[in-house]
Amino acid sequence: MKKLRVGVIGIGFIGTAHVEALRRLGYIDVAAVADAGGGAEKAEALYVAHGYDDYREMIQKENLDAVHICTPNHTHFEMAMYAMEHGLSVMLEKPFTMTVEEAEKLCSYAKEHHIVTGVNHSLRMNPQVQQMKAMVRNGEVGDIYAVTGSYLQDWLFLESDWSWRLDPKMSGKTRAFSDIGTHWIDMVEDITGQRAVELLAEFEIMHKTRKKPLKEVATFSGMALRPEDYEDVPIETEDWCSILFRFENGAIGSVNVSQVTAGRKNQQIISISGSKCALHWDSEDSQELWIGRRETFNQKAPKDPSILSEEACGVIGYPGGHVEGFPDTFKAQFDKFYHAVRNKDTSKKDFAGFEDGLREMILNEKVYESAQKRAWVKI
Image: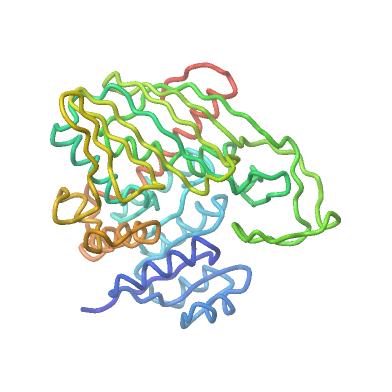
């Protein structure tokens, strides 16, 4: 079977993760990478045959089947549209775009031209998240009363921590929610099959001014600088947000999202209260799903393909007792995406597509609106 030729645009932390996951699939040829910061050097470091500074040149020359876009989100619209206009399938990192209008245009073009698209909401592909989804779908959880949880990180804990994500011109009007909170609500809506219809959001900026490095610092690098290497910059986007949700079936929800919680590197919690049982999943204990019951013993379901649902088994790569994590969710997501690409299947799918990216942007706007008004808003 002929390998699919893929190009990756943007080779930072996430772009490198995309390259590694694609290679694990076996049937993908990562033919080229493009990076404005030195494509040839990035390609050489990753043992990719060709590297470009300009993504347009890569698309024009490499006879690709698809591209992965792993750049700051203010570039997403232009890059994704250019790739689709050249007949390529697109896997796009999130946040999806800068505005709802951009998201609508990308969705419309993809639908009109029957292009397979994806958004990297890979965290859906945690096996225990898929197990929760299966249990909700087959009625084991019953009616859903409430969904609660959090997404906590500490990589922006210090006043001197800096990233391009702190610049609203590059990342948009929200930060903590759009960067990681959207993962949580995407997983919750996918698990429950219920959409949020109303929300109330509260934002807080812990560091009203941050020290921006005068030299480039890679995300998560931990690079140490001297005091004279910084400039003080006022911050406009939230370090923390707390959100209440009302779902379409009447269930209530709440989430706390933070990039300034010391010691929490990347913790997601989803707790579901149902009329038959409760479910609780913590990404820091990701290999087990807690199942709570009133009338008998509680349970813990381990990540084991011999006992879990078909949906969970579909994203498991190793036997029970063999830990799977963040990189494996990328591999599972991309495998589903490229099966659709091979089959030219743009029908409803079990991975996030551009329509889910549009949903993400609508939620971003509503969360921002609610936080500014300090009032409930309808979605």
